[in-house]
Image (cartoon, rainbow over all chains, first blue to last red; front, side, top):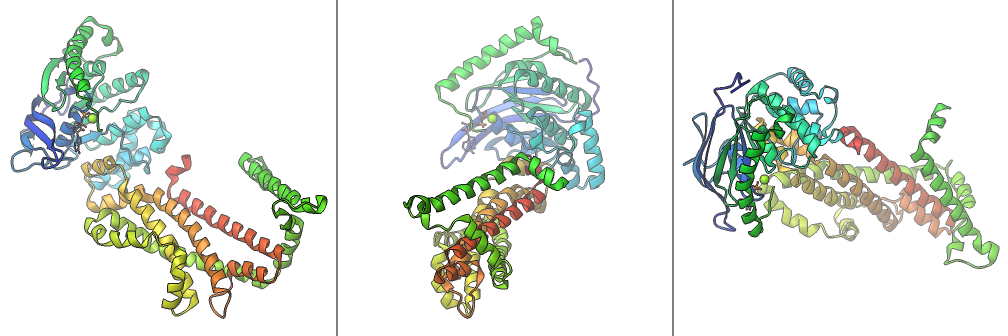
Length: 282
Length: 269
Ligand SMILES: Nc1ncnc2c1ncn2[C@@H]1O[C@H](COP(=O)(O)OP(=O)(O)O)[C@@H](O)[C@H]1O
Ligand SMILES: [Mg+2]
């Protein structure tokens, strides 16, 4: 594929096999994910699309190691993250999450936020970490804002800074949970361009949850449509639009065709979810 | 000169000063209305006019006794408050982060918490050897419960994403506590401190009036008011009340200043 000459082509392959997640089996017993399998190649941008409350966040949390899985296994580059005998993956900087509602520490400046990872890992001295953080924020177009607190910048900038905070840890996989959800279309467009630019530079594997179909196709190599709860893989759509992609891509014939294809699959599930009265928990 | 200028060019300050002047004018008319019309509006006519109170204020300012009242009330408030902070903050944080600690200490805490501080006065007068210690104890209690409940609530409501993010980046339990939970709880600590400070003043004043300036544990602004009441000096009662208002204002501004110092990210709000 065009423009794919990344340093980390070889790492970040996720293999999700027959994963089932039941919340509180002895109590409320909610089956959020059911026998779900997907393969995500190293350096791939993998978009997960599905109705609200279907179990997308649950799957992401399992990969990140925030909670256990009930059955199945998840491997990263062939190493077991969680599976039989090890229900919960360890949390690690190789799998960094960008949260649905944003999780920059409000009490740290953008620069301090970004420097936090290398500092606690003692990977760099505090001074070096701050310098690197400043540099990376500047590369992401946030040079003027490094001394600002998250509460002082727009949500778009905060989200960008959060991605930088994840990337400074040199993760194998970047896990994003509807990061641009509450943004207007114009801001989103800018966020997309900036994410793609980052991706083209780092080649990090991206696991990206959204329910914005245009976003899914614009950003993704593959779009995995999942079913309403419990979450299963319903359909995978491959996006062969070459990179680097630009704004104009979205008006192309190819883009529109793919959009229809995804929309059809999602719509069916959305109707089911709506009829089941599914609501989303975060 | 420039200080005066910048003082009055600040809209907030100008508004505040204007409001106080306006209040004094209303007070003046309220106090004078019975003299002018012969009718007393709801007992307001008994209130001494601001001029008389001002004269009484000038009268007490040179007196050492008046300033001693400030000193004793302040030292009681600060002692009770600081001890409550010193014990309450770690106690609240421990309740928040340790399940076993919470299991053991939270139930008795919740039973003692609803007891109003003043209900402790008789018992503590009996238990503690000196009145001064009883006052200190009751003052401490007043602030302690409020501070603990705020710290606990604040620490428990920290967004779990912060903890997850920090852990993913490799934070140890130690880092989590000092770099995430503590700063995340600071706003609640300062809310607890502000409310707790208000309660300590209430408690100290009431305790000073109750203990009534006996041989020990007396004095203070509470006793100053009580004494003025016994001496029938209405002007001095109001002087005492205004003094307490000023003292409370000084304390809450100090807490706000300290809060800004420790939470620079909150200056934006
Ligand atoms: N801790 C939990 N306990 C019980 N049920 C949960 C819990 N977390 C999520 N759920 C349920 O699991 C389902 C999937 O949730 P989630 O993964 O957040 O959905 P999505 O991210 O796709 O919107 C929802 O029905 C939700 O109510
Ligand atoms: Mg979700």
